[in-house]
Image (cartoon, rainbow, N blue to C red):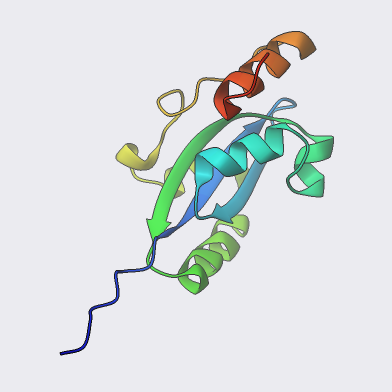
Length: 119
């Protein structure tokens, strides 16, 4: 009898709000960990120039290809409609991770807290 392979973990399409009010769309296996990377300046070049404030929404997909196709589709949508791309239960707003603090020292402390690092 052949051993069953456990299902692959889902990839997630996520939408970030940046400090300057812009939106960033990405794909990750672990959205919380990816948010921390973005906040620490270890993510995409865009989020190094436009630090993220919070995760607005997240949707799981069965494969990376499906998530990347959804990311492309979301990037084609006008800004005002991006949040509507997600269902109400996929919109996290402040549920998953609260917004980072407004000052540099508050943001560092929040990021350290999220990452489990000393402040």
